[in-house]
Length: 461
Ligand SMILES: *Cc1c(COP(=O)(O)O)cnc(C)c1O
Image (tube, rainbow, N blue to C red):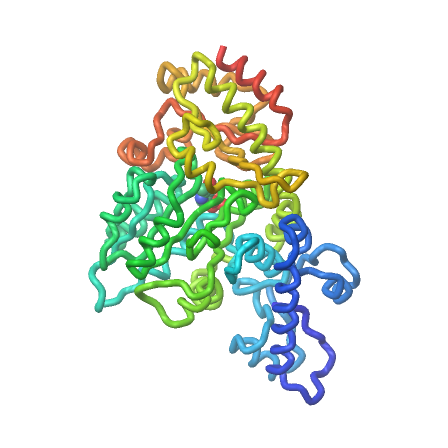
């Protein structure tokens, strides 16, 4: 997956060349692990030497070619046996996607001793699928499979679990209705459980849960905890350092905040617990997924989208800082508005999970003086007094804030989850997930909060 020297190998075998390449890349990771968050986000592992190997390009080159040319048959054989770093074919690996994966693995383990690998995917849902499906394979020595998941999750995830895994494949889905209650999680985990899953903060309820406590509970049962921290980004929350085993991201959101790409990623620590799967699955789950199930299912990320994402990831910390401050200002405004029934924002003292949010959501490397500061992300939701028609009327009067099923954008966007992202799970599913029909979800972007508040004030009047 790295630049290979295309001159003849001389006396060295391709395997030895491969070992050198792998060692150099590992050295590069070690160098970057010592750097600060923004430096990692800006450079990843693409250093001056990599630039010179790419005609001096200061940015990671875009490899749109589906396939790699090999010097000779020996190299081809070695590469296709996964015995040397190479990329071979974009469905499995691609140099541009690889640079993004390495950056993500570094950011998700920032400030910790955890070692992780990443696998870029075509979308966030492809990441959720690839991070969960390998744990559901048949094993007659185990009881019938179940999964334990927070019901406060993204609509697509809810449908994947309940329809694809539950209804179509007979996996029992045990929804946790109150993710703040560790006893509810504990009561649902048993010898049939294959993994435990939660979103933090969740979309759109902003629900939080105690990652270290739930990780311990999962590990005691010998199963992995999988966390979707899309709404927080690694700039605010790095679950792997808190005990989670696998992280899934929709990179389509804040990570690619300009809104020019769709993509996802799964990032997994090395040596994860699991009741099923080959040794490779435990040792390096992300690489196992990439080389085997991902290769066969085909949800590869487009290199073009990887490049668009890389360009935005460089600024993720400063953007999330600014958007979070804007969201806090807007949430505080909405909380005092008479037409607003409830505001859900992890930064409000009135928020049910405020204690955990304040404990866990910190801006990486703190403020400009390096002082630790809480930041709570760009997403909030609020319920409009007067029911769903009143909520629609407010929503339809927005002029600056755009109406879209989208979040984590440089442009502020709003949606009504009950008629969009969470429509297909139905009334009962929304009840479980805490998605009332008069709820507006708001994602705050880079505009001046004064103008956003003026827009909301006009719409609510
Ligand atoms: C949007 C979203 C997803 C799905 O991501 P796509 O890139 O749209 O497939 C998963 N989880 C969360 C929390 C999301 O907001």
